[in-house]
Image 1: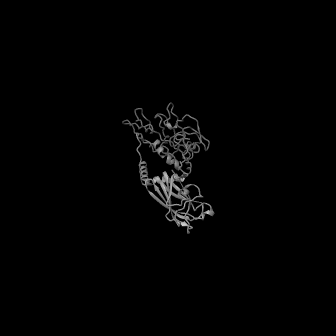
Image 2 (image 1 turned 90 degrees about the vertical axis):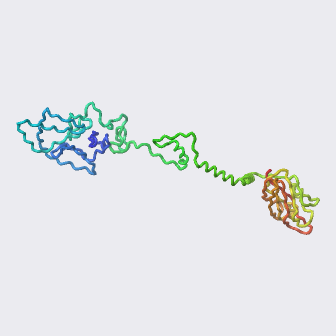
Image 3 (image 1 turned 90 degrees about the horizontal axis):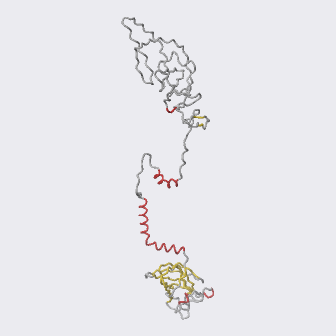
Length: 398
């Protein structure tokens, strides 16, 4: 099967040309005896145009005898034409003087043009006719380098299992792409795209460019802006950093008991001194010297070193037992005053319940060296009764 585009000869049954990969089965193949006729023109046979349906075969016409051509003389010369064009017909010789001029032959049908010459044909080689196959020139390589077969194993089509030459791109039988290449890469997840963006920019420069080498990497705007924001945040929260640090330690750590080195009271009976309220026993208590509600009476304790105060535990009444608890008046409210080493004073009012046992209150202070508890209100006041405090304990960090 001869390709109408490039003239390459293909094996019978081939659907695509092995040289230019043109489709070969748009029209019907030529039938014997219809290669030339009277109706053929002198120009080369046109290439059949692709069509949806094959064209019907042409009707054979009788071929008339060609007209005799004038004989050429040895003196006549012809100018060589390009290899791809047909050689021009020789001009008739001029008649001699006195010789009768032969009559011009009657116009007849133009001779059938020979088939097109191939790029490697010689001028003196015979031109094949429309129904003939051109002869391969001996000792000359093929003009089309793409038609040269390459060495290697045959490529089998995965669709029709037809073996194709190794240099084929499309299958000879079904036209399937033989080497589709590697499959497309799957898209990376979003977190891989974010993490690998800077690395891809470094390792994959733009085609045709050469990246410049830098001795030091130019910092971006993200780092300076982040540092400025962090510095501003530290400046504004600087006064509260110590409090935040202390709060974290207070919340995560376990407070310990803080024992004072000196205690005193505003007044007291001789058998119920102030130290009875700090001796860790709940069956001994402190009471003021004067009978009555005792408003303004207080107990005071000093620490050897500044401490971090967290909690205050109070046992109101004269005892933690129920039957002895109601024998004396009890404080209902106390004002706790914390004095720091820098002589800063912090006050907090706490309200007690009228019940025996310990009652715990959150009283926080830093660098505390002295604590005072003053009576503001009392429960069970009466004639000859005094407000009693059985035990006071402090908890915090040293």
